[in-house]
Picture 1 (cartoon, protein in one colour):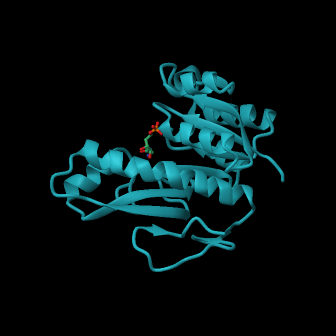
Picture 2 (cartoon, helix red, strand yellow):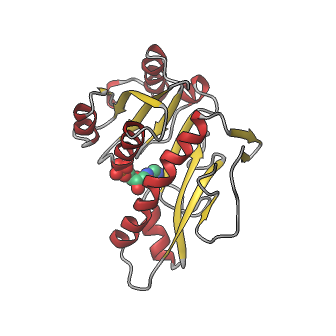
Picture 3 (cartoon, protein in one colour):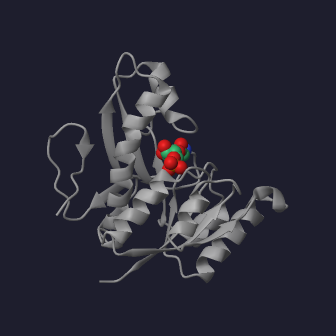
Length: 218
Ligand code: GAR
């Protein structure tokens, strides 16, 4: 089976980055992460990259004269290495046009809320403060908007009366670590088709179970 070449962008802790590394190392996904690019020299993701022998680059927007130039350079580093799929694993910036143009329908993001609710920063806090009873996480293709691209997979969790931002975030994060690798696996198998706003998943098993749709699939 073909090995998907991945480039990861992350700004912080990198627990999603780790979940993807683990899914690759255990053979669940046929892929290789060729490079981690971070905008934060103190990101713990760097330690994870080092531990797993993944090349990393620190690229900070302040070292560039424009946002376009920044994302053009990121795209060029990814292309140079033959990256086919770009994953945003807690990368806290809106992606610039040059990167999207270089990777059409090939940039994926994980967001800690059920989009289109609560986009942007602190999706978990926004949901908890709003008082919704169900929240969750979303993996979606990235477009020029803020968390507006076509949805690939979502998973939901209950929001409890006594939740804090922290307790809700932990509950959501456990599902993030499942659905992000699942979305990447489906991409690597060529099972994702974008039709306008809809992402159709070839061979997925949908049912009426609450909380996660689609099922991991066949
Ligand atoms: C995750 O909860 C991810 O969904 C969120 O940042 C966290 C990163 O954690 N991303 C966003 O809010 C993007 N708008 P991690 O570094 O441990 O993966």
